[in-house]
Image (cartoon, rainbow, N blue to C red):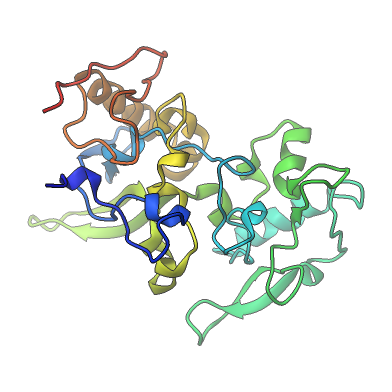
Amino acid sequence: MVSRDELRVLVEEPDEPRSREVSLDFPREWVEFLDPADEKHLIRADLTWLLSRWTCVFGKACHGIVPGRAADGCCSHGAFFTDSDDEQRVRSAAKRLTPETWQHYRRGFKKYTELDSIDGKNPARRTATQSDDGPCVFLNDANFTGGGGCALHAQALRDGVHPLEYKPDVCWQLPVRRDQEWSKRPDGTKVLVSTLTEFDRRGWGAGGHDLHWWCTSAPEAHVGREALYVSYEPELTALIGKTAYGKLAELCAARARRGLVAPHPATPRRTPPLARGGREPATPPQS
């Protein structure tokens, strides 16, 4: 009998990369804690995801979200902006690009962005695409003399800043999903609940199931040397704040030392994630 941890998404062609992805439904461990800097901010964190060994494999083992376009990675479509601050950050970063660093150089915000719609009704602005079927206008070809990959990402590295300071929100947050909502407790008090978890296929809506491949479910992407909560410290700090991240890291490290009850099925079971400091956490016996 096949164990629950060995379930895979079934596709017509067994050689398709999607056939190696794990099922979307599996046990997860969670922790809740109050932000030490704000008693009205509650964080719910998915330990199964944050202690996984996921890492970006763009340009390496990435198969891309569109068949035959692995070089695009997850950049096959434009990125929708979350708000005006997001738009302004990208606008400022794009001004630092030149034809030598941006293969599809365009001057002017409205020339490298387009109006579209997320829900089919309300207009929303996103980054433009190179053609009607993509990819994103900021994606340089791998053989571009100025460097392949995201032009904004590369410019951030040249400027000595983290890429989250230049890229659209959705681009630097992936594959972490943060949901926020105000929750009313039985005693009438309210807290802002920030939920941190995996941005899996369902995060894209119904269309997510049609993606050619998605990395969070793929063992090919669970090859990081560090646990995700360590490698994604800047992004997680930007999402919940420095003090809250400090507490999150403390709790993640403590859980890693004890060994997860519900580890991510895409992360190799015999090579548990490294916790902060590079020490291997204890591993519970496998039945």
